[in-house]
Image (tube, rainbow, N blue to C red; front, side, top):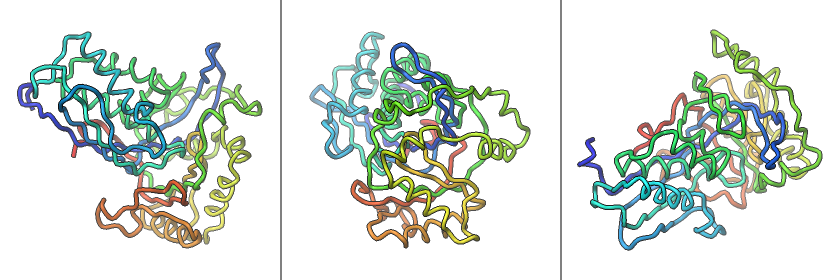
Length: 336
């Protein structure tokens, strides 16, 4: 697609992520925590539509209920892009100028307060989507600089490739990881990230895991190492704030032997918990068994035959989903 033929509208699937592990290695003087983790995108998506319109300004339809649109990361990302694009003298080829409105329509499927990066992913794809519509006037490093100011998870979603993540989230080293069948349980409790990171009992001095540790020739060796020698250090603190996380872990652990996960842990700062399974069929059967034990449960992709059949609001319910990690989730991959 040439710059002259760029459209005025873009439809994107925005993936969630899980953390295969998460260690806190320190804290900077500005209060930001230093982390080490492996991030993997998963095939649970928000739907994002970006449309160039009139009048000027950024408008959001949809999003997370109860959040002022002007506080939404998606809107803040669009505003940051417009400011940088204007400074760069960019235009949107479809309309011939930059003084237009940005209409964002966001259909949420990624649960909020889950540790799955939904808000960060929406922000990253807004940056990339607007940059695409403008003919890519901003470089990858310029987008990354904007991303880290929006949130620690946002830079990861710009690449969309499984990665060893360090620093405050801005240092990314890609890792090749095969598709992993996973099941995710998200309790109805929303767990604010700040509550976990400000807890005085949080361990903040974990030994660093060097990227050379992951120099395995076989991905299964890497995964075996991660499952046996790493953890999510936020999980102990999160379980104290949210007993539902303990219940989610127990639900996985109490599955019949044939449906047992290979390993189970919380993602991010919670409250979602995931299990990695040996194959897709086992993951699907496990998800059905888990959902059957929860009376107030929203399911995703257990029986759905199309995206429209998927439930979208899990704000006051347990959420059960099965799918897989993704080997890549770039902007081009996610254009609808």
